[in-house]
Amino acid sequence: MPSHLPERRVVPTSAMLAALAVPSRLAILSLLLSVGPRTATECAEVVGATASNCSWHLRELARLGLVERSDDDTGDARKRPWRATITGIDLDAGGGPADELTRAAVRSAWFADTDARFDDYLRHESDLPEPWREAAVISDYAVLLTADELADLGARIDAIVRPYVRATRADAPAGSAVASISVRGVVDPRFVDPGSVDAGSSGRRARNADAMGPRARDTNTDPQTGPPRTPDLPSPDGAT
Image 1: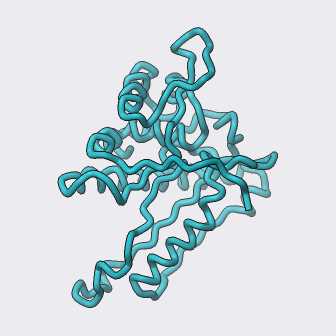
Image 2 (image 1 turned 90 degrees about the horizontal axis):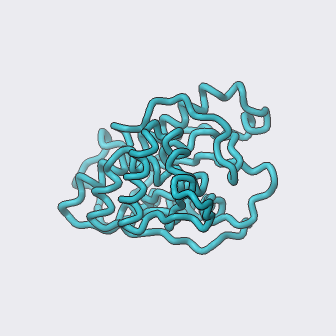
């Protein structure tokens, strides 16, 4: 089992949810979670914004306690990297009833970019080393279960994946790369009688964003140095 560093998952406040609903801002935070400290200029190359715009977003994220300047003091503030202060966000908690639309927007944007990352993988699949192509997990299942069983399945998948999360893994071996694992288990509304299931019986749902998110696009990425090339997908603006 991989060893790991302490988790610093945050329960978002209303202000955090509103901030993360800004597309570039969510993309920048996700990049820092995915590949580690980056300067505003390096963030700009990945998220498709200007360096000055990224600097503004980073300052806003810092105001909310989500990022901070790293300890690498280059003497030039423009070249001093920023790093995430958290390891993930619990998107199923925090805020209040008035924040539900904002929460849904953040969640939708996060997974829209996850889909874009998968499209990026498919475009570059033939260029990747054979071991990474053979290791790829591409599956889709139609399952038959109860609400409690779905909640339990999600919890078990989370328990398997969590030790490998980049932001908390302390013993990644040589040859490791940042990979994207996206889990979505939802009932198909077309086949559910709203009155047939006790909606409160399944307990808390696993809806967490942990260290993988928008714009961490290269599956052949060194976890320390980050992407060796600038992704060629459009800016996440408008999709976060």
